[in-house]
Length: 374
Ligand code: PLP
Image (cartoon, rainbow, N blue to C red; front, side, top):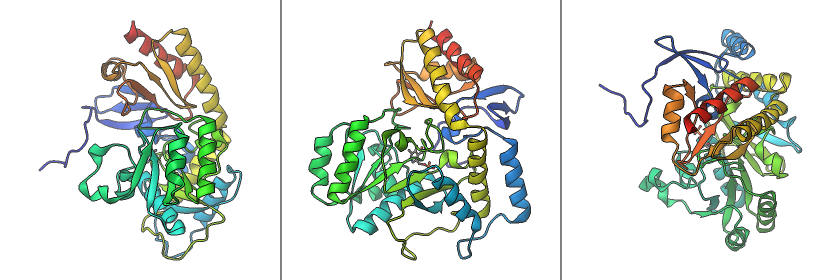
């Protein structure tokens, strides 16, 4: 018997973790600058987070959405406190599911079928989410029935040409691309896109699955662009490892009973995990901290004269070396015991640490990278 092995894996078995320290089965310590794909937002084993989950587990872990759950209402309020206008929360369990629901909802509300997405996008692996992901090698024939067009960032003319057909239910955008390699649109392009959506009746979906919950130095990345999306999708850092996700839907859209649904979404433990993450982000001022540590990273990279350009924002940041980085990442992991991330652009090293990371850890990473670049 064996696993259905779809992952390329490192021969490392992690058995415990604290803060950004990971310990393997041989007692070796690693530093986590990756958070398991940007999931660990407030650090492994944060005492407030683990206490909140333990307490909730002692009371009730799960019941479905057939009953009212006041924790969902509290979470809706806590997320809304970080938004400029009111949104309504619908909860699910993964990033792909959040985007799937976002696009489905846009299709219900507009009664249209097409989706406009961007070159190098990644929105997940379920039906419409993978179809809106610019990676044909992960499309099964089943996924190719969706009508999706991919446009490069900055090509507003092409967006207008397509959207003016009034056939597009939604435009889905990562305002800083994760898997794609940390590219960002200009503010002018993002605002132009918002205007085109409004003019032609398409809904704007901000995919904040990776960039949300403080990671870019704003609660949501789209806020750095002055956007007002119709739907916001979120997951990853929202639960610091607990599988919790959701969409925020602008107040003007009225829910219709039965149009969306899920068994696990919004259960007691999931809500408690997300509430604890927000407590920590607020109490420890982690959004401002992420912004400040971006500057620490920029300064350290500049002082080290690394042969790379910096991409991304806040603690969703990385280095583009213009040459492949697989060897560098291997050396960082096996020689220095540092986990960093890759991207679909082989030249980019992605750095997605917990927002609680300190200045010394950032400087240590840059000095290890410098050593291997010498
Ligand atoms: N959207 C973005 C921007 C992502 O980065 C990802 C995962 O990497 C997803 C959606 C899919 O999330 P999940 O793997 O939780 O389904």
